[in-house]
Image 1 (cartoon, rainbow, N blue to C red):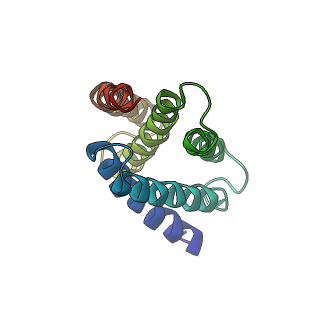
Image 2 (cartoon, rainbow, N blue to C red):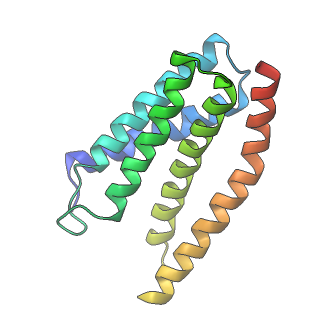
Length: 156
């Protein structure tokens, strides 16, 4: 069952995927980084707020709502770093925003994996999806986080 919240969630998450990727490859701290970063944050806020309004899967609060709250925490904590500028804020900003983006990649991989026409059903499909998520998130983290941490050190 698709709702307006589902559509809002998918559109906002797609915008966050694109702007987050651009933020990763652009020079840090400059105008485009900031503009796309703010766009990413707002897209993540909309995606997560919409996710918290979707109950068609189980009819009540479930694990995915918990992940949306965790994502909100990562994103808002990452946003707060350049605003509050605590000691070591750049590294903290990178840390929290990278977890925000990796969570978005994991959620995207989950959606892709559950819609693949696999012959697996029940527990084997759940296990295969979990393994797939672990691999996608692990590879993405391994590739992205060192680049982001280098950029944070260079910017500090």
